[in-house]
Length: 219
Length: 219
DNA sequence: AACGACAAGATTGTCGACAATACTTGGGTA
DNA sequence: TACCCAAGTATTGTCGACAATCTTGTCGTT
Image (cartoon, rainbow over all chains, first blue to last red; front, side, top):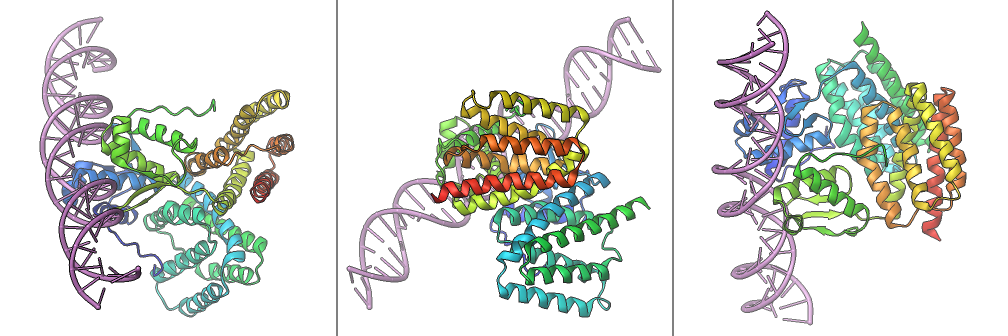
């Protein structure tokens, strides 16, 4: 939201963004086969650009490809979700740790502002904005790490898959208010320039979120 | 080594592997421009397969690409190396944690065997094998995590870049014997099924390694 | 001399056609 | 009926050509 609008310069970019959107939002369902010729007629572009778009989606972990067979949208599974959250815990924990050192005072101030604006809207606004706000919060900390590998892996490699799970399994649960407190403590730790604590709190935050989702899946 | 031989089925695969090898080993130097036409004549394949190979290399963080301009091999910098090791610390720490839970008893036994065989060769064998042995050790723990995201990110996304730094900045330092002790303790923790300790020891192991490299760079 | 506009050249992006591989369907045999 | 083999079909992989964009070098103006 807000922070990330990527601009498509080439036709492959457009195809990539469009395809990614349709996959994440379930318009193209999970585990569906992606036919290159079909998509090329649907999007009115050459097969080459569709191919390139699909290749990029593979790097994003949104599709799987087999040589001489084709590409499918990834399958969503409880195990896959667990694995995803394990990686998130690890990487975002490190992001919070680094953010505590590398975020500028101004960025920290903006993060606090974001938190305040969310605390006001927390009961009035509908779920969608809470979801977007949560993403925004995590994005800022990821960017605050100033570690390009980390940023790239999380933003391009994992977050669209996280969104796909959220949309298609109907997440965005009733955990908003407690999650908000966790966010507050994380910001506090970052503001205090306490890397250890920031990492630990972020890891716990994501772990709680994972447990919450697991409980939902098993009910 | 040993564990990972990837088999090329398509022409793009071959081009990808070859190009990756040449980049990692410095035959194509860091920051060099990759001309599609040039490479296509050199490899005697179409530009399309070279393009696809380059795209895949971009996913590996080995080249950077700008639309309508072209691709360059990544530049190696001390900052980049630090960032890389920060991500490694995070991910491999998690890998060790998960391995402590998910590795089979048999896999743990094999890991111990590997360690023993290395302790014998540690003074006799030349540097190359020590290097390979180190990679092998880390690979096994990564695979032992049984987390596909983690495995993919580390094996396909980071390790070739790590190797590139090692080869081109002439790493593989005199840290072998102390590193071996660290490896031993990590295996012990995994064998004891102690995830917390395994993660902590792995993180420290990688941090020490990072510090060692930093010291070398600054001397 | 410095700067900017323009033209020529080179490189990347996109396309449609052909080749190679995998899947399907029908027939035959045990 | 169940299984295997083979031809046909569909899909992916590869190629060379054309279009669009960027870079370079030249010229003219201030």
